[in-house]
Length: 228
Ligand SMILES: [Zn+2]
Image (cartoon, rainbow, N blue to C red; front, side, top):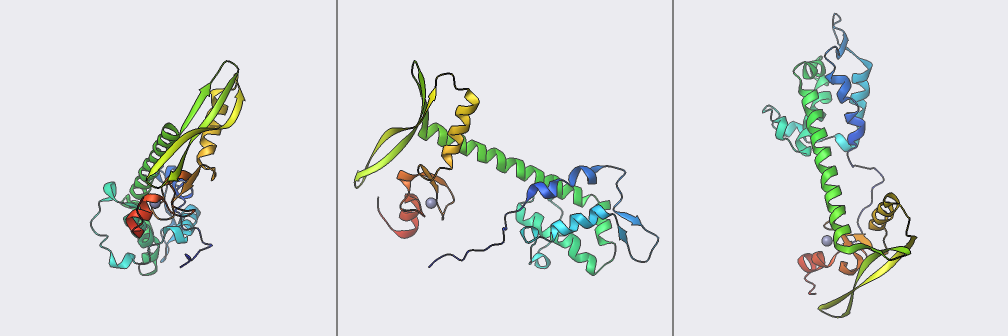
């Protein structure tokens, strides 16, 4: 069955939310600008923050069923942080001033801080993975006059026995800077002629380790009973 495609990007946009962190960490920041009134009047930045939280990528529609009383933000995962973030602005509907109290007890800053940590971890993991693919399947061959960027191609001329060979994908002048070389190597990782991302495990694979255009051989074996 074809997968349903959605036009809504549900990937959390960390940067847009983390933009607020230094502002909220400022000790002079006050979430309420008029505390005397019967109902709270919030700082415009808080309004902008809540608009961001109301985006689909940050909403947990099920936040009411989660236990959000035990505060363990330091170790919270993304799902739990989304529940907290949703509860911050949704609960204001039932209790005026709820958002202000979440600022006062430090919860908003703690959540954003934990989000920043998770973002940093994901970025480091992404870089490590890219470095591993480059290390495993790519090489830079230098000769007297040229630098060749090569990628290892895996082929299956016979079942069960793959062969591999190095293909030159770019030939550069020997004076080419390391920066330019690194850029080409990195771009190659997202070149579908050489690497494809598996729809099921989301891992990048050399095309020779793909079962077809969509799934990798490991997923074909593990999920579909195909034997390599
Ligand atoms: Zn896979």
